[in-house]
Amino acid sequence: MGNLIGVSFEVKAPLLTGQPLPILFGPFGEGNSGLFLFATGNKLAAGTLYWTDGNSPDTQSDINFLEITSPSEPLMTGVMYDGYGFIFSDKRSFMIIPTFQSGALGFIARENANSRGVFAKWSICVGRDFIYYLTENADGIVRVAGNGNPQSITNGSLYNLFPHNGKEPEPVILVAGAISTTIQPPDFTIPEALRFFYCKDYVFFRFIDKTGNHVCIVFDERINDWISYDTYADNRINAFYSEEIESTSNILVGIEGGVGKFIAGTTIRENALKSIVIPFCSDQGDSRILKRYDEIVFDIDPALGGLDYTVFYDNGKTAELIANIAGSVSPGRKKIARVIQGGTGKLARNISCRTEWRLDSLVKLYEEQFYYIPRADQINNRASDDEDAGVFGDKFFQGVIIEADTFGINKELKFVDDTGTLRATLIINHNGKVNKSYSFDTPWIAHTIMQTSVDNVEWIFYKSEYQFDIEPELGKVWETQESSHGIPGFKVIERIGIVARTTAVATLKIYYDDVIETYNLNNTAGEKVRQNFFVRSRKAKLLKYRIESANDFRIYENDLEIWIRQWNLPNTYQPVQPFGGKDYAIGAKI
Image 1 (tube, rainbow, N blue to C red):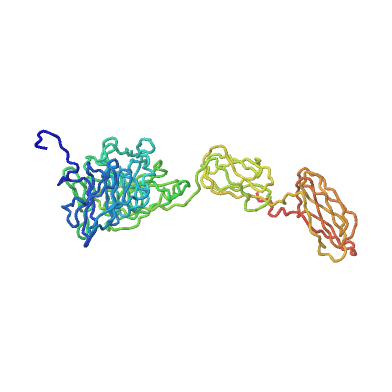
Image 2 (cartoon, rainbow, N blue to C red):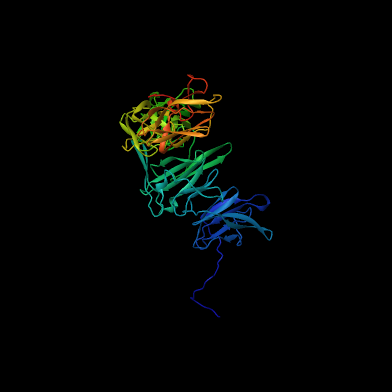
């Protein structure tokens, strides 16, 4: 071809030496197989993973690479978890698995099912039990146990800090009484500022918020919740690291122009610092019901300086006055109990306690525990279920005993029967948890009862107990078996007294062995009425009774009288009650 001058040429796959990569993680392996470091971040091969030679972190063979994804899906970062490497793209994650090929150790990548990608290179860390990272579309922070399913840890109180389904992130406001703190969303246009760190059971998410401030939120792995929002007046804190040294460890932090370390004793910095802990409110696992909080117990070493604390209720809407736990001349870990509201307790849905002490006071706060009694939830127009008051059958409802708290305000309650008919309206007023009894102006008969309300007045309903007596069931036919009534030989009936509620004429049939006598019972228009009549004289060994009507009716056994005697024993009539339903078993209790 001869010599060419001033022409362009191209090397298809140049081998460049000494090219640093931004992401390095490891080591993997041990023993005869050697230790390996992994790296990624080559802009010209964005989907490629590289690794060093075994036991030689300064060298890398030109065959030590694996193309995992296409350049359109760049590999973002990687971590070591449970002895294995995990590499993340901006869409998914892979587990790095060792394999032997031609006697040499190499690696393959296996995609993790249901995995998610990482948003930024440094928005990931490994905690005690999980990998924590910011998801590929920045819609939240998740944690995953290796190749398991990612679980969000920001779907609760921090949900609005992240974008969701096209909705822009919004500030989150923490309220503690008159004190409120606003957490601004991260500025996701500065991905290099989105950094995760892990140190002593705490996961730190440091970022620049939308107002340009350097801030950090802290997740506690032990209690599985976010516990702190940290700000830095001079924006100097950049990284957190636990330096493991013999028999102890140091907490190192990156600051402007160097590295800082927390040490024992008093320093100029510590004299101006306070430790302030504001936990999220705790509802003891039930966000709906009210509780009466009676006591808070601190597991604490108050040291010489002691601490101040403030108890907040209902997401910080109300608070007690600032209180103090004094320092002790004999410091040491101890349990210190404090009553709430002078011992009378506080009714609330949730509770939190803000604690504050100087760092140079050497106070150690281990735990706070709240003692409470579960109460009912605060409602307005919620209806009760259809209640049978513990008795399956018809009842004569007379009144109700109610335990409730209407906060000293009148509350209107309505009571309906099992047909939906309004039967009674009561106005109640309970200031505090109080028991009161109420009678219904007009008692009624029903199987069940329901309590309703429509006045929108808030109240706390604890329980109620209906006052009633039993009532015979309705039926169109009442029929007995044949009976001798315990009387030997022939017997004869003189007269009958029947108490019934009927809405149509009813017919009484008396079966004398094989002969039937018939009598009519008047329509009582639904009222409880007694009807007496003499019957035609006829003897029989066995007797049977049948009452029937076109409409349902009730027969009252307690008031039934059938006067009967043995045929050959005159003037010895005695009453029997062979049919009907019981009533008046309890009487009027209200």
